[in-house]
Each structure stands twice: as structure tokens, then as C-alpha cells.
Amino acid sequence: MTSTRTPARPAVSSVDPAAVSALAAALRGHVFTPDTPGYDQARTIWNAMIDKRPAVIARCASAADVQHAVRFAREQGLEIAVWGGGHNIAGSALVDGGLVLDLSGMKSVRVDPARRTAVVEPGVTLSEFDHDAQAFGLATPVGINSTTGIAGLTLGGGFGWLSRTYGMTVDNLRSADVITVSGDFVRASERENADLFWGLRGGGGNFGIVTAFEFGLHPVGPQVMAGLIVHPFADANALLRRYREVSLAAPKELSAWVVMRKAPPLPFLPADVHGTEVVVIAVLYSGDMQAGERAIAPLRAIGKPIADVVSPHPYAGFQAAFDPLLAPGARNYWKTHDFAPLGDDALDIAIDAARRLPGPQCEVFLAQMGGAVRDTAEGATAYSGRNADWIANVHARWTDAAEDEKCIGWARRLFTDLTPHATGTAYVNFMTQEEGARVETAYGAHYGRLAALKKKYDPSNVLRSNQNITPAL
Ligand SMILES: Cc1cc2nc3c(=O)[nH]c(=O)nc-3n(C[C@H](O)[C@H](O)[C@H](O)COP(=O)(O)OP(=O)(O)OC[C@H]3O[C@@H](n4cnc5c(N)ncnc54)[C@H](O)[C@@H]3O)c2cc1C
Image (cartoon, rainbow, N blue to C red; front, side):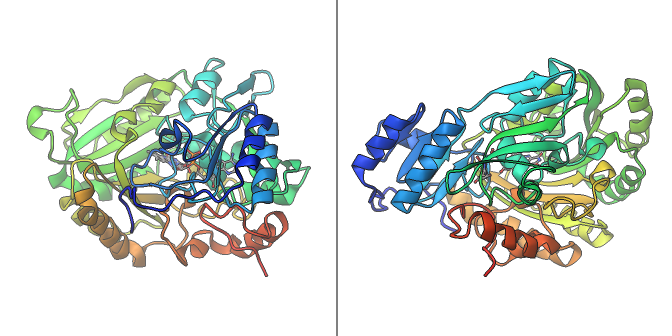
């Protein structure tokens, strides 16, 4: 994998400067090119391994700006990449030599508390969404790192602490405003352009540019029972088998996820544990506090934890609890699998890899799925992983480019060792830029239908900076 910043790369712009000036004049937002001040900052995303040089970055302020920029790209024959929150591990928010539609400044959230819906623009981050919805005591399932963009997360499927209770993020999507690659505006919902609406819900941003998402919301919090139970790594074998048994029997309001990593210097952990391998069970119960205490009790009774800091937390605060460990600017390489079931062999392989962590920020992460994720029929949306009991993310994270080979090698080896034990589908939002033929398998049985839809909405594959679906012949 090419990974380091490469200043020697040739300049990118073969784009007509007069056309760029016309675009800049047409937008309410701002245009960056390689010779514009701020260009390097404007092409910096969450994953520091990604170094791409777009010809033009159009920081759009509205759907009208998106239309102008899409038509500009078509006239100039440019590939388009779409930037929502800029978090995608594969760096798909950027494209070498093409046009980036940077939607990160489009940040409106309009909550309708009576209808329990929110209309959300594509530059909104999860913390911004939670902030505005929680003001009305409402929420919908979104991910666990609050600086992630809601746009990319939703289009790949989207899951988080509330998914076992209320489904995938896409299960809560009511409609979307879309600008097609021709620059036309269409609305997608169960009633309008239902085929497009199906594809938006898990098809990974392949079909058009979403300028507004309408979500259904649920009463959540503001306080929830949540926190961490931290165990010594030496107990991992027995602990994880018991965790698996208990969490499979848990009510759908409870999510219990596992992280194996070296302990960060958290104040509630004894100093001699810092920097040593631990098993963390992270939990959130989305309903009544006392029912939460009862539901979490069997997990708390497993083994002899080093620390148990499960207690009432503000929901929005817990949504940001892991942010310090996931700040932008580090080098990141991920590999992912779906598991159903999560067998003993897979657990043993994961535990063995966690014994060989290549760095203090690397981790093996197991997100428990099931519950309400299965209330929506497989095939009702493009998201392909509804059968998964767990999604595993092998997360290599480090700061020094000299460690690229070591950290990437560790992640790849664990991924390969786990492959025979996984389902074959994969969460497209956790995939890197070099997955090759695996992309088709990741979309599972839906790939043929997705390819036909791609042919209808993007026959020239202008939107290919994503986990790409090739237009059907
Ligand atoms: C630290 C971290 C934690 C995460 N945790 C979770 C989690 O708990 N649950 C979960 O589900 N995911 C999680 N993810 C994965 C996350 O869902 C993806 O990285 C997602 O792509 C991020 O969306 P974004 O808008 O920030 O990314 P971007 O990089 O801006 O966009 C990613 C891709 O989405 C598409 N896209 C974005 N916006 C639009 C749009 N408006 N119209 C059309 N296409 C668009 C484009 O193809 C784009 O390349 C996490 C990611 C990180 C980095």
C-alpha cells in the first residue's frame, strides 16, 4: 500500500482555469485548487495515511452549489469524490486529479419534535446531530466516534450503541434529497424513486450526492446506563466465551462491545495496568435506568474486573467518550469481517493477535449486532450484513510512517487468519482502499441489484471514489 505523503507527485491541474473561475463565481461556497492558499489543509482528512491531490475542491454551501459543481465536473470530464465528515478510512472523500465536493460546511439540523424527525445536511458530524436531537430528548442510531460524518456513515449502513434497539442508521432514514451525476434534483423515499432509496441505504454513496437526510428519531436519555468493564488480559479466553454467551441472551436495549488493546492511562485504572493488554467490555443500555442495571448485571458478574465504571451517563457525552482515542492525524489501517456465529476458533485467533499488538493504539474491536438490526428484512435495504452477530474491526493505528509495514502487516495477518471463520459479507464503511474483488462479496447477495441501479443512476461511474459498484453491462 502506498502510504506516505509524496510531494514529488506531478501537479494535477489540467482543468480549464476560466471554468474554475466561473465555478468559483457561481458558488456561495469556496473553491480550492493546488495554487490556492489553504489547499493543503482543505485536502487533509481524518486518516493521515491518505495523501491525494484533487484538481479542484468545491466547498459547497447548498444543494445549488452541489448542482453547479457536478455540472462543472461533467463538462471538465472529472471524477467526483464526496466529502461528508472526511472520516472514511479508505480516504474516499478525496480523489487525485478530480473534483472533491466538500459538503462539510453544510451543517443544518432541523428537528421536528412532534413528528420525531430530523432533516440533516451532509456536513453534520455525529456530535452535532446528537447535540441538536438530544435537546428534545431524541436520538437515532449513529456511530461511536462523535467527529464522524453522518453522511458517509448513513450511506454505508451505520450502526452504534442504539442499533440493537432501533436498527441500523439506514433503517431510520425516511427520505433523502439527492443531486444525480447529471446535476438533477430528485427525492428518494419509499414513495418516490424507491429503487434509489433502497440503494442509498447501504450502497456506500454510489448513486448520487445526498444534500439532506430525513431521519426518524426515538426518545433516548438524556441519561443512559453505560460505561466500561476492564479485565486483565490473562483471563481473555474464559472471559470472552462467557461474554459471548451472556450478550447473546441480552435484551435488545443492551449493547456490549469488546475491545482488546493496551490500556490507555485512564484515571480509573491502576498505574501498573497502563500500557498492558486488557479486555474492555463497553456497554450501553438505551432504556430505563433500573432495567439497565438488571440487564447489565450478568456482564458485571463475569470474572474479576480491574475496573467497573458503568453508571448513569449523559447519552451525548457517552457518544463522545472514545473521541480522545480516535483523534484525527494518526495513521490508520483497518480490516473487517462479519461473524455469525463468532466461534471459538475466531475468538482464539483474535486473542492471540491481541497478545502481539504492534503498538499502543492498535486494537481488536468486536461490535455486537443482532437485536433490532434483524427486524428489517435482509433485502429490504442495500445493507448486506443483517445476519452478522458481530462485526470485527482490526484497527491498526500509529503515528510514525516507519511503522507502516509492522502495523499493516499485523492487521492483514489477523484478517487473513480470521477469513475462514467469517461470513464473507463486510461492513463497507470499515474497508480500506485496496480490497479488490472483496468489494463485490462485501455487498453480498445484493451486488447484482446494486450494479443494475448503478447503471441507471451513474452509468459512467463518475462516483467511483467509494467501495465501488461497477455499473451492470
Ligand atoms: C474513528 C472512527 C469510528 C467509526 N465508528 C463507526 C461506528 O461506530 N459505526 C459506523 O457505522 N461507522 C463507524 N465508522 C465508519 C464511518 O461510518 C465511515 O468512515 C464513514 O464513511 C464516515 O463518513 P464521513 O462522512 O465522515 O466520511 P467521508 O470520508 O467524508 O465520506 C465517505 C464516503 O461516503 C460517501 N459520501 C459521503 N457523503 C456523501 C454524500 N452527501 N452523498 C453521497 N455520498 C457521500 C462518499 O463515497 C465518501 O467517499 C467510524 C469511522 C472512524 C474513522
